[in-house]
Length: 519
Image (tube, rainbow, N blue to C red; front, top):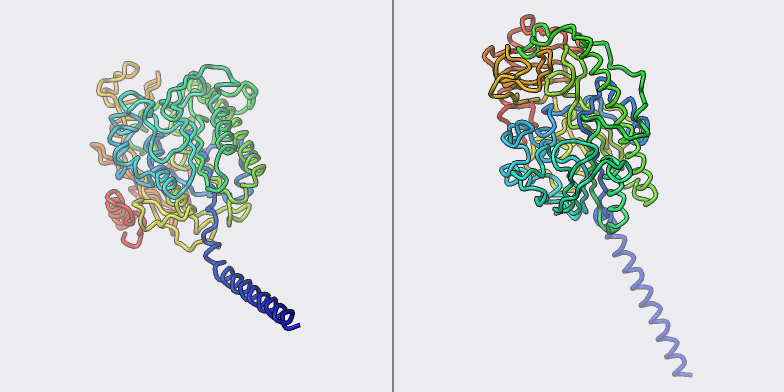
């Protein structure tokens, strides 16, 4: 009996000790819950960057699926801008979070620092994908990178920028067929077979392969950069007859003379010849056709994320590198100008903490994309040297606190040829991208810097680096199409204030670009 009682006592003691251990373990687990929540896998991120897609002239109209799957499921920013309206400088701003005067990419040429050895050494090594990779993100890139990427003088296809695990980058500028890719540093040539080579479809399909093969324990970042709607506007076969009755919008500044504007805008023939109008209408229609494949891309990607049960933990950004014009101020087709149609871009985001069908008027810039993505990834932004700021507080206020900017800088360095254009000898040297009727889209003296403000008053103030020291000022509340330059009508004190803001913004670096109180 004594031995049985001892045994029973030991079992009781054992159960008591086990209970204590379990309670202690539970309490320890409960105490860890806050930190464990903080240590949960960061959100995945997808960034889709189209090429030359306007928002002012109906560029989102053909993209019904994209608007439903991203815009309606999240936030649409009604005041999103590029800080420079040209492909390579704008994309360099997206990657670095910096104004052009800080990353020093001036245009689309190697001499303009586009994907140059100097860019690769200085700015590229500090781009936000590098920081994502260091934070444990699996990274994928597909599509157009920078206009001069892959050229022999820029390191060729062997050069894979740091931060990318899976690299499928177009060599050179946007095309849809007959191109070369750098696939993780190896050249891959493509022809004109729609099923194998159409670039928009190819990059989304490869992103699906990446999603299938990735490690589910780590977050991922996907950047897709389709060629659409950039020229040569080659639509997929199934879309080549779409929008046959669509024409470029005829309202606003369409086919109007550039009265009281800088020298370049005073040169176009106005009204435009019928041949120019027909050409731009055809371009407008084909641009929309190419965007239908991008619309499919978004749908395919969202469905895949849903299938993998990753959609609810993924932020999807949709944006363009710059806007575009088709006949505004009698300029047939291009970008590069300071006006709203060239500097405004579409921007929609969905993701955790973002309410559906939200439209925000908060001014957002393409230099804010990098900081926002890093903010989502949990990177300490105080340790990041970028000019932009995170807009996560604006689109998901439950996650972050923050303030919006009052005004910002738009800057551009004009391009021109040293010799006169054969199509337009009467205008002399220094012009570029000229049409047969002597209308040119760019020139050396198309170099400008602008202050744009939407808080308090809706104004734009621009100064040109030309021999006229030309100034343009617009009140966009009363004149949304910028038809009247009011520089001679506004209070000189306002002009002085805007001039001082511009001077400071043109030399700003990092936090000084964001602190509007100093201006």
